Length: 282
Image 1: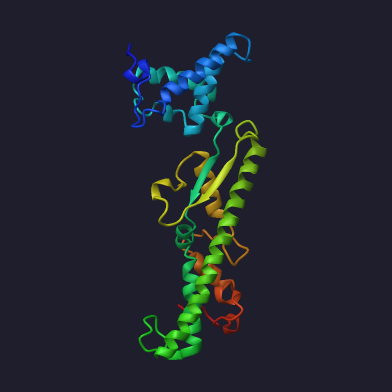
Image 2: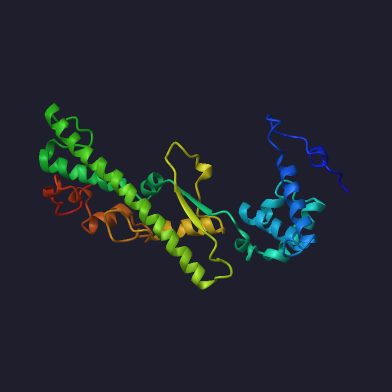
């Protein structure tokens, strides 16, 4: 049998600020007060149920039963807690979300997503097309054959396309968030016990510098955030179009957008008159 650690036994503080109570002591005080109220018929339920639901709620907020014992999964304490959790939330955490009190958070970097989908290539294609229309054979990707006046002209056009990029990013974020929420409602309609009404999901869009990659939700997990992220990534309508990404093997999303006539500059009034090429330009 292990002995209580010092902070468990005497409530010593791990924090530099001695005025701030240790988490263990805060939890002990709250649980003691709750079970004392239960035993005095001042609160419903029973002590064992309270403890069981408390641990299940902690596991749900952490994201899995395994997260509770991740610090020392092979200990006898971990085995006991694991047995308790399996009897409450199921062997595969199938009932875990019913105990969650914190929102499930999906963290997305829309710039990364649009870049991975190849959407920025479409703005470059618009610039290249307009450059050919304006300057003919003088236009090259390096622009080294353009005069200063022509360089200024194409830079003004690029500024308009950059503003469109920003607007499209906002549109994509709105569509992505709506897709996540719609998918949650579909899951809830199919299995209300697993995805109860009180369960909420938030979508946070992180800037490319403000949030580390480790915080971003990935699509490889089996947790709800990962499932919702992957679904939204695959089905959210691309900006400037009414279609989802084309995941056909070997197909580039940018090619699909341009092939269907959705050239970005057509949505900029000052640039729309440049039209589109008879065949796709590289």
